[in-house]
Length: 429
Image (cartoon, rainbow, N blue to C red; front, side):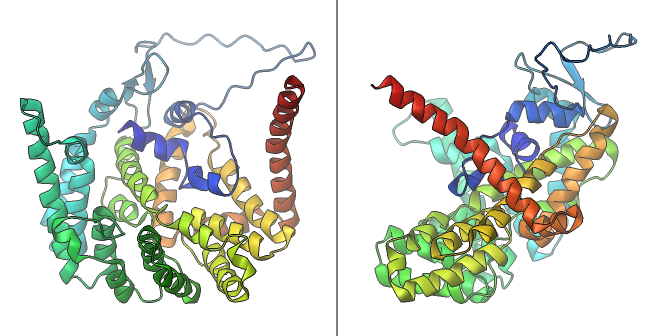
């Protein structure tokens, strides 16, 4: 649970994965969590004799709550751990998290539509931490009662995954198919009913989408099939869009979760748990795409042409920021201007800075939580890149401002690195 909560409050979308494009030091996840939960802004530390004196704080009425508790949106109080982070068990209790999850699952299972059934199967799998651990940890040869419990949990997890895979086999809904394929493993290494699924079938259900062919490329690299790698890269290049459906399940669930103020922390936590799993999926195959378009392969004129098309697709017609980042990286390799590359990266840098700003003051805590829930919903419905474009249009900033932002950011990252390198060189003399 802590991972899901931090994913949604401390990291926005999949920007934490953009290390592949730009080196960036992440903010403290624990601090982000505390600020987002309580609505407190960051504390600025001022050093210097010229600083204005800080007036003493006005006396406040004594609180009825212990000092190790903080107030969340909805007027609920939750305990904190010695390091200041939220206590997971107490968070579940005060937000009625398990109650909200159980009610949501019951509603989904009662809904006869195919997608609702698929989501209920999938949500049951990812929501059971014990089952997930069992599926990974259960080992042969262990005879203890604990190991037997793990084996039973693993069997239940596998049965649920098989049921989802069987539903996908007969479905014509790409949303159902990709949900099952991601659960089984996109490269076809699954077991049981998962063996019936393939990225090629996903491509048939969604023929204009490059995302299935990224999975095919990943598998071809694993199998060292050069001909299939070339074909998959070509298919990516001629696709009309790349749609990983990142955030789609979270958006679907947000519409079904309670919308009142008291329920907002639970809604945010559940949506964050889901979008955290979806974020992990979005990494599939991207490293292989970048490797196919490296400086050595681009010496071939035909490969350069294909990679130019791949760069345009990922940078301009994808639904995730990491795809946009990979597309920009490949575009830089095939000769995009420095202005275009810096503008595109500067847009993301500025967007991240604006979106991760904590709400100002306790009164804004609920507004901040609701804003993040709404943002997750828009990402799931329209894609991260579309939400970024909306932000750019609403920012009023000109392209040259984003270019300056990125160049200043890069200089700020490069300066400490250069200083450290110089110090190391001096020390080695």
